[in-house]
Amino acid sequence: MPGMQTSGRVAESEVKGARVAPSQHGHLNGPHEYAAVAIEPQEAIDSEFAALEAMKANSPELWKRGIDWPVVVWIALVHLLALVAPFYFSWQALVTCAALIFATGAGGVCMGYHRCLTHGSFKTYRPVRWLLAFLGGLSGEGSVLTWVANHRKHHRFSDHDGDPHSPRDGRWWSHMLWFMPNFGHKWHRELAEKYAPDILKDKVMVLIHHLFLPSHIATGVVLFLIGYFGTGIGLGGWRSGLSMVFWGLGVRMVYVLHVTWMINSVTHMWGSRRYETTDDSRNLWWVGLLAFGEGWHNNHHAYQRVASQGHRWWEIDVTYYMIWMMEKVGLAWDVVRLRDIPAGTKPA
Image (cartoon, rainbow, N blue to C red; front, side, top):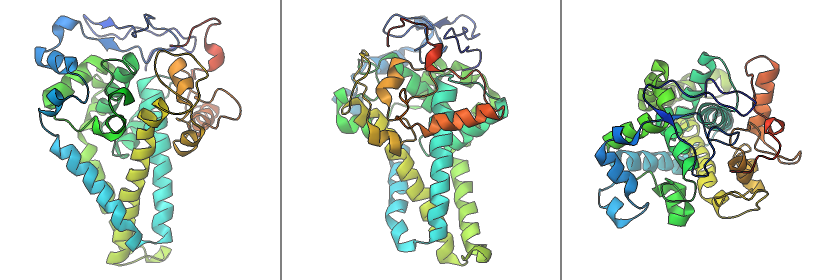
């Protein structure tokens, strides 16, 4: 986040009356910390929020609160669009789908939401941060506020009580059920205030948060219009318009959703462990390939602020290559690398 340095020392966020919380491992602002996020003092946290936080993940008590139907309908609709897509195939739509997978998955989620905004693995200009946050929203995984807050919470309690999506609480829970219980709007607000106060202070980020659903509607309209009027690229008509929507929205979002959800589920169950971390994180090569380098997950959990999650030359990390190219053209700086970690620093 803003104010972090490549040396592994991070600056305390300027939130009045707040404290910076160490991880469960006892290290404060170390090179493997999830972020220099200011955590509100416990007495400032609403009692209802505290009660929800105390509930066991995937427990009958939690599910008794009901289902977050807007989220469930959203996920179902996206998958329905993807199921219909093969009946409206066009090569133009497939190319659009691939380009948007890269832009929203690699650029928006992996580089933007994850490495830049959650962990502060590199610095960039504010407009670039806003663009990455916007692209992350178009992935369909939730707004920047929700994503960053949940991911910082995950690193604070990884595979222990408090982790929002650990396979120890169920494989499908960790993959896609964890965000479906009805936590309530108040809980989401408190979560952001506790784990993402730096994002909340940025008014443009808050605007991007509120544009989550409108941005998808606008994207769908634009895709349809390109297909409907795109006679110059071999398209044209209603069928071409629907082809662009079904592939550019449905198939694209289903791919990005599931390959990034696999980081929460699959790479905490299967694979190899280079570092003895206090969680169950694993390195899994095929998830690394599908998820733009995020599959080297044990590497990441060991030293969370390092921009590259591939710690060996053969561990392909497309997201880091993008950061490296941004650095070369002056769009990224203070990139945290493995060599910046002080010698003898233990994995998280």
